[in-house]
Every structure is written in structure tokens, then in C-alpha cells.
Image 1 (cartoon, rainbow, N blue to C red):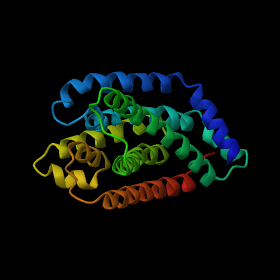
Image 2: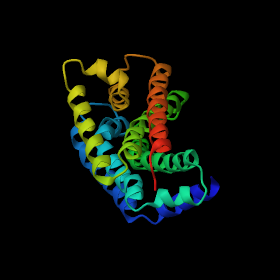
Image 3: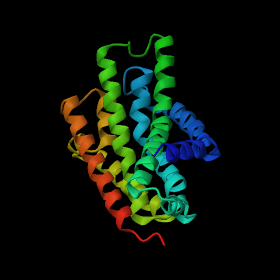
Length: 231
């Protein structure tokens, strides 16, 4: 497990596409602040309001980081070398989730710090720490969908296309007449509710919903990877 994590982290640190996406995420989020800042209070929540729109970066990265490993038979090599499939899946998921958290949370940290310096952002408190924990759980739940699709379809094209289609469907649902109902059960909708400070349910309920999404999607990925033929 440790060797797999080291190998995946080394691959991530050397990935130009990852660092390019991180820079693009920060630039795009900063541009989007022009539209979201009048809607919410403070740079942090204005940036949080835009986080669901950056979800496509996590999808693209999944196609490159996980889907490409199937195409290049990298995961086949791990299994052939004697690593358990469950261990390979766990290591890949841990590094991918950490990558997604960095891509999506980096703008929040930068803009939140800028808000604090300019006295326009949130103050450090137990409330903001709890909100930060909910944000992370929602981000992890969001990023499990591309992992699930990667281990289901085991290629680049469908790992990119299917989650992207689901992403647009979720955007449509969150802009429909029942947007708040959808937002309560969709992780990316939870982020929008937190940004608008309009949570329909408690933060504990948000955690439970996110945990359910993570468990279901991870289990589906595990079952598919365990049964697939890697010869």
C-alpha cells in the first residue's frame, strides 16, 4: 500500500496537466468572482458559490489520472506485480481525492485569505471549521463519481463523457423549479446552499448524505474492478 501511494504521489507531482489545471482553477474561479460576489457576502462564500462550476476539472483529471491508467495498462501491471485489487483501488482513490480537493479547494483558500486581509471575509471560529469540514465532505462525494465511472468503463473517453453528461444534468436540476430539493441531496448543490447560507438540513445531515454517496460509488467501483478481466 505504501509503495503504491508513493508511486501515485510521484506520478501526480510530475504531472504537468495537474499543475496546469490547478492554475486554471484559480484563474477561472477568480474571474467568476465578478458574477458571484454581488450574490453572497465575502470573497470566501463568493468563491464557494462557483466551486460547483469547477467540477468539470475533476472530471477531466479523472480521465487523465485513472482512465489513462487503464488504457496504458498501468493498473494491470500493479495487479500482475502482486498487489491486491482492493489496495490498488484504495491507493488510486486516495491520491485522486487529494488531487481533487486541491483543485477545488485551492481557490477557496486563496480567496478566503484575501477576504480576511481585506476585512471582507469570514473570521476563524468553530463555525467556519465545521463549515470547512462539510465543504470537504461534499467535495469528496462529488469526486467519487469520476472514480466510479473510471473503474466501470476503464477507458478515457467514457470516463470523461459520462460524468460530464451527469454534471450538466445536475446543473440543470439545480436551476430548475425544485432546485433546493435537489441541492439537499447533491453534493455540488450542498456547496451552493452553504454559499448562499440557505441550508435546508443540518450539517450532520449533509455529512450523512455525502457519506452515503461515497460508500455507494466506492463500492460500485470496487465490485466492477474486482470482476473485470485485466488480462
